[in-house]
Image (cartoon, rainbow, N blue to C red; front, top):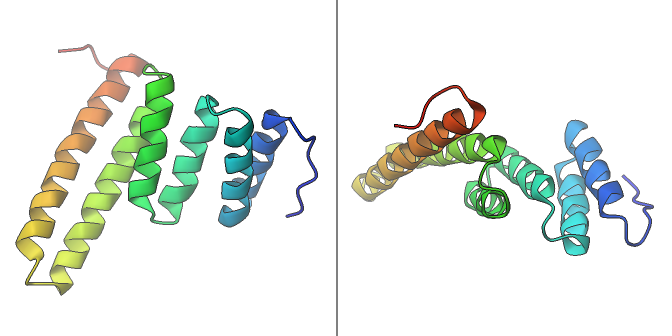
Amino acid sequence: MIFYMGAGDHNSWYSAGNESAKEGNHEDALIAYDKALELDPNHVSAWNNKGIVLSRLERFEESIVCYDKAIELDPKYANAWYNKANALRNFGQSLIDKANDDRTNAPKLVNRSIALFDSADKCYDKGDVLSGKKHES
């Protein structure tokens, strides 16, 4: 994808990132989201969508950082909570898969994945509360 955006137009970069992501051009999407965030570091949706692309690339730790930034900027953004939960769960599953091949480190990997699954559950609950699917307990 060729980017020909207005120099200071973060929304055009954000839209280009969305189009690239939709087309499966993940690296182009990351470039566009990074440019949007360079121009507007408080663009909550750009942080969230960058996290989605990183998750698709199985770069879970980086995606979680993006979701955390989106949540920091807007703690009531339910989608970021749900997306963080999915990334935590997928990261946990990847560690379980790795533990199957690495018996030496398996206990440590399994313990870490359990902690990630617990964190994911809390994020799902927070997303449910924010979206009105569940009342805070």
